[in-house]
Amino acid sequence: MYTNAVPILVVRLIIKNAKNQVLMLRRAGSAHATGFWCLPGGKVDYCDTVEESAVRELQEETSLVCNSLRFLFYQDSLPPEPGGMHCINLYFECAVSGTVVLNNESSEFAWISRQDIDEYEIVFRNDLALLRYWKENGDVLPGKG
Image (cartoon, rainbow, N blue to C red; front, side):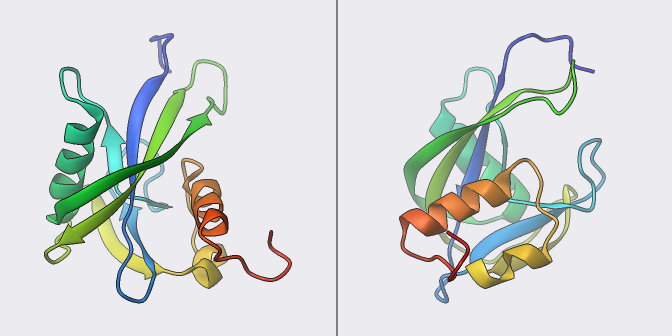
C-alpha cells in the first residue's frame, strides 16, 4: 500500500529495431508484476531530469546507450485498488546503440511487432501505449483500430 498521496513519474522507452519491432522486458524479482512484460523504464529519481532518468533506466536495465530521445505522450496509470500506486507514464521514442544485456530486474527480452502484442501479458498499461504509438505511426491491424 502506498501512503504517498502524490502520483509517481515514470519514464517508458519505445525502442525499435531495424525490423520495426519494439523492445519488451520480462520482469523478474520485483514486488510488482514479476513474470509480466513491459517497456524499459522506471521511476524518475529526485534531482534527476526526466531525460536523465530515461537514459539511466535504459542503461541500467539493458546496457544500451541512448543516442536520441523524443517525447511522445503521457499516460495516467491510476491505482488498481485504493491505496495503490498512481503513476504518470512519460513515453519516449529512443534510438540506441549497443547490445541488450539485462540486469537482474528482467529475466528475458523480446522484440515484438504490432501483430505479436496479444501473445504477451503486458503490464502498467504499456500495451495501450504501444497501440496508441503504432496507431499514430500508421501501424494498425485491420479491425484493431
